[in-house]
Amino acid sequence: MEKAQALYETLGAKLAGTAPCTAQEQAALGFAARLATAPSTLDGAFMTEMRRHFTDPELVELGLITGAFLMLGRLHLAFGVAAMPPATHGVLRPPGG
Amino acid sequence: MCPGHRVHAAHVEGWSPASRTARAPQVQAVLHVDVLAVGRVEEAGRLHQCVSLHRGAIMAYLEVLTPHAMRDPDLRAMLQASGDEMFGVYGHCPEAFKAFLQFYRPLKYGGALPFALKELVRLHIATLNTCHR
Image (cartoon, rainbow over all chains, first blue to last red; front, top):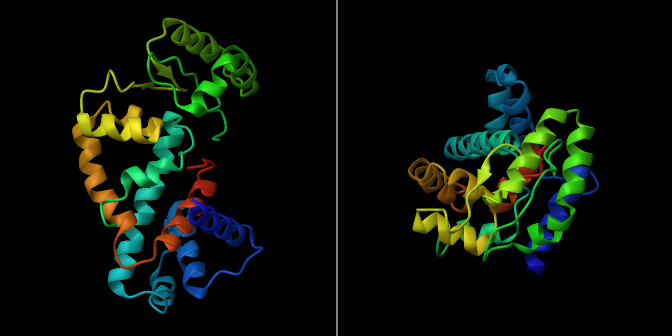
């Protein structure tokens, strides 16, 4: 639990700009922002830059999970689903995952 | 919490997650303060009626199935273990939701990319969606 709390404190600081993001994290956040708000800007030049930080399989994985987050988040908003309790990770995490 | 989605109530026999129970006594006030605050006066009346029916935990737009009402045993166990009303909502369509989870779970918790990177993206998207989830 303390480990998880430390993780989310770190992530929160990175999103708030009070802790530095790695170049790969910055690229992933930029990809997510564009996919969420301006997908037409995901052009060849941008994806070439993304390939400096991720392999092609990693980009597919990043795209799939980012799309899933985007879809789920919007559905949760539409349906009014409450904030996720910490125990959800334990329920969803596959055995050994 | 998502804007306009602060209307939640829990009145479920034999099942009351702590987060819901804590808010239950304030349901009436929350309904009138938060719903009116976002200008959805007509919904205040509708939701008040839903709460009065005691059909289960009521959220902003859909009924949250209780473990007792959920027919799928896997989703019921997930709901009971986590207290996450997501399972009570998407449990209305258990086959499709379980198929989605088969895709989502290994993608989120496995794969080549670090879990922390994926969580960073998820939190960023939650901000973009103006929803804390």
